[in-house]
Image 1 (tube, rainbow, N blue to C red):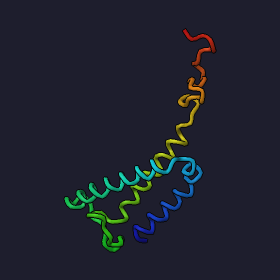
Image 2 (cartoon, rainbow, N blue to C red):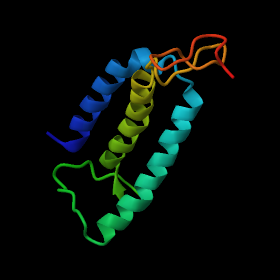
Image 3 (cartoon, one colour):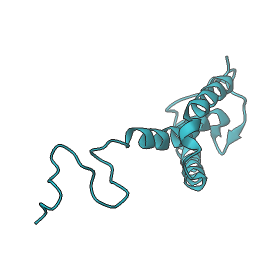
Image 4 (cartoon, rainbow, N blue to C red):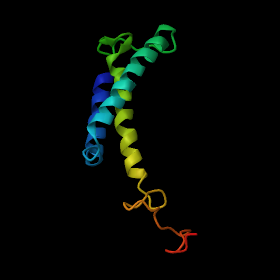
Length: 118
C-alpha cells in the first residue's frame, strides 16, 4: 500500500467521524489553520529531508513534491487541522469549564448561592 492510499483512507475516516462537529464550526478558521500548517510542513519537512533526518521510499510515494516535501506528508497537517478543533469542541464542553449564555460562570459544586456575592 502506498502512502497516499493510506493517507486518503485516514483522512476520509477522520472527515466522516468528525463531520457532525465540523459542520457546526466556522469554515474560514479551519481553512486558515490548514493553510498555515501546510506552509510550515513544506518549510520544515524540506529542511529535515535536506539534512537527512528522514528519507521516503520512492516506491511508496507518488513522487510529487511541494518544494522539497512529498505530497503525502501534507496529510498529517490536514489531519491535525481537522482533528484538533474537533477534539477541542467535543472535549471542551464540560460544565466546570464552560460559561452560561448569560455570562455568569456555570454552577458547580463550589459555586456560591445566588445573591451571596460580595
